[in-house]
Amino acid sequence: MKFKPGDPIDHDLCTALKHEFLRCEDAFRDCEVYVSKTAASSSQTENFLIAYKAYNAYSRFIHHLYEFILGAIARETGDTTQLEANEAERHIAAHAQRILTGRRQAILKGTAPVWENDISYYPEKIPADFAKEFRQFRNQSFGHVTHRRSTISMSDFYAKYHKYVHMPYWNCRGSWGLREGDFPDLKEITKFSFLIKSSPPRPETSDE
Image (cartoon, rainbow, N blue to C red; front, side):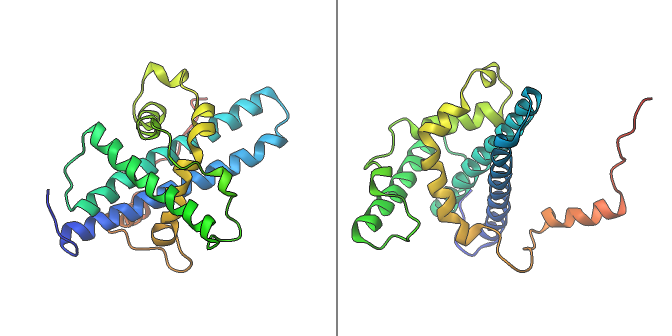
């Protein structure tokens, strides 16, 4: 569906984008928490549990970031029509390359923040298969139940591509992340709390 900036669809899409990025931010912070616990784990069972939770958090981060980027593309193009896989990959690759180029230029010009990595951390080009791997990993680790989930390596994905997913996440935090002060009104999303108050879910009970 076509829409224009400022119309009702645009407003609703912005609400959905805010919600999706907050979910992405939650997942990233959860991942940081579980990763910080790995050094303190004392048993194989505990290692497995922490790894399980860290995997879930990182796969949620990948999923929500991917969906957020697709939503941002829809807003940029003024069209909510679902993109074909190859078109989505093309947009994502172009977006990642713009951010990468911007990072490199800031470092070379001396305008990058003090916490920025050395120029050697950023290659001139994103990996040719990054966008495809991003989409497939999002599908197989979180989006769909598939036999491939237990064989694809999140460790490999993280080692090869984390910098390229972290850059768009970081770039969007200022505009779409949670800010200090009041939590945003997300329309029907935050109205859900009123239903929970009036009709809370039944607690789990033991069969014993």
